[in-house]
Image: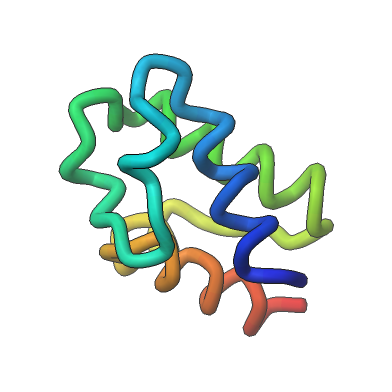
Length: 76
């Protein structure tokens, strides 16, 4: 799993947020577009792209996209 690719895939989920705002250390829950639906989209993307199952607790624990990446990577 490549971190830059992961960031791009997460950024692609945010349709109304400028991609330049989404970086590795972005606090994704602070983005205006963040919602429980976005959390489900992130979980689905990680499952589809990386065959890793994130749980709601994983999303709640993570603060940044780097945190999400590290959690997903640790479950591979």
